[in-house]
Image (cartoon, rainbow, N blue to C red; front, side):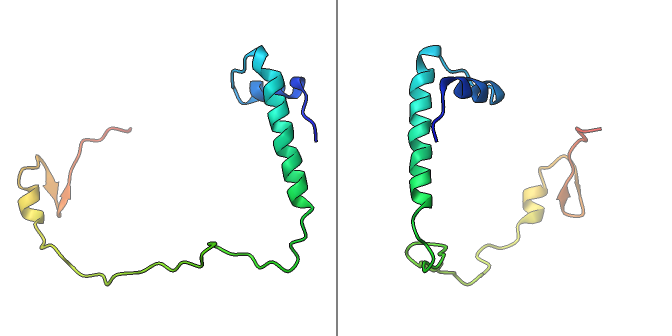
Length: 95
């Protein structure tokens, strides 16, 4: 699939991208080569290939959820200008 310069300029305009006139042909050639590669990859037979989430079948090691710090809420909120029911009160900024 070949992309020409007019299509590059049209897409650049729609995407609000600025491409110099000197770069339009280079960009068109680069995108055309990428699209040719995609076309080539779509011809590969993948009927017997199972989809995978990770190429190394890695598993995530999970740690036990253990409380490691004590509750210092009152101490931390003691310097706050306004607190209610353990929550910081802030001024309303959106009407």
